Image (cartoon, rainbow over all chains, first blue to last red; front, side, top):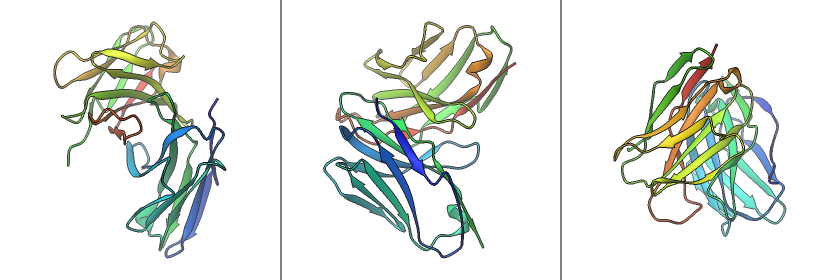
Length: 112
Length: 116
């Protein structure tokens, strides 16, 4: 059974820092891995999607990497800003299914 | 930019009552999903829907739940007799019509359901 874990559970950093969020999954048989942002009480905003054949994806200050063989992904946020404060979720899309399996999230606070 | 919309944003109901949560997926999408998130817990898959039928459902999606695409734009989740443990945020999602599993799912803002 696929399990997705995110570390750390919470992170508080000063503005301007570069930071790394970690996601691990137990079964490497996946189509893709997706990173989402969730603001309090709000929906999920897709940030980056990495297909299983890819190693990384970039969007602005965000870079996500995928090492399928070791069951790990990282989300790198460069030059963090207070507006980046949110919960970041990773989700894997396993083979032979169309659903996403989510991790517990990392709650990020960036203070001025 | 096209987006998934959901109504209502909040719903309070009494235990045992029926509720219908509504979603309007992105217009050219043909694959639809419901997920839920109990407060403080992970987002969990409930059901996927394609070509007017359920393609996959989780253990959570028991006989109390049903989904329907009543017209060309809406996608609904019905809970026949709500329980206290159904209190959660319910998210609708959709993805495009390329047919390839593994493409981005786009999520709506959610409906927060509170069962008293």
